[in-house]
Every structure is written in structure tokens, then in C-alpha cells.
Length: 161
Image 1 (cartoon, rainbow, N blue to C red):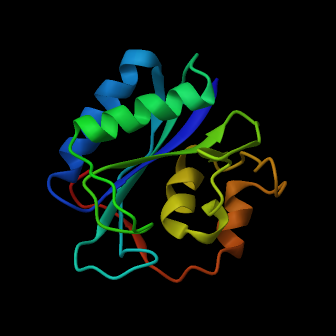
Image 2 (cartoon, helix red, strand yellow):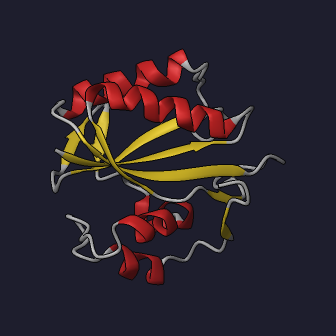
């Protein structure tokens, strides 16, 4: 199934965490395309460290919940620790944005990710790799969603791509 993932992080060697995540993901699927790495200020909370984000087109035979389990294992193996705060600094975060055109509403997984349309740091890399993909709930392309997005945070290509 063609799956769209987003990598994010702002602690430690984030580029290394991205490379290691991509390597681990390749064990149970195929990396089809990577966006550039983008840099932005934190969304939803304050911290000095900027975030890096990268979108991935990923082909996998894993079912969505099995994929989520593998992703959580990758994050844990790379040193991610979870706490009660929803938005916080981290060395790696891997989100499942889309799983084909499926709409999934499970207590552990909601796909498409609920906040795609509100976050430029998600939409900008998506517009690079899947600009004409139509959001299965909103019926709009990624470009249309970006053009309508009210997020004012600057999203720029990371210098050290």
C-alpha cells in the first residue's frame, strides 16, 4: 500500500535520526520518494530548537496498525521517549499521514492525520512529492490545502540537505 509518512525532530542529530529511520523502514517496505528536509519553528508549543521535517512515499504490505507498531519500535530504538505532553521536543517522530486513500479511525491511529491541513510544515514537503494528491476527506489537493492554510510559520529548505 502506498503510504505517506512524515519524519520530524528537533533534538540531537536529527538528520542522522532521519537516515536511521529510513534505513529501518526499508526493512519492511520500499522507500519510493523523499522530500527535501525542511526547517520550521515549533508548532503548538515553544522551544528554542527548530524542527526538521521530511515527507516520504513508502510502499508496504503491512496493515496500518502493524505499520504503527513497527514505527513505534523504530522511534523507541532511536531513543524517543514519550511523555504526557502532546507537543514536545523529540529526536524523532514518524507520523502516518496517509495510507492509500483509506480513512482509519481507531483509538491508536487516525488516518489521514487530523492536522495535515493546519500545518505548513507538513503541507510544504507534501506539495513537493505529492502536490496533486487529493485528501480523501476534504477532496482537495495538497496544493489547495497549502494555499488555504492559515499557519504563519515559515517553512524553509534546510541548508544541509
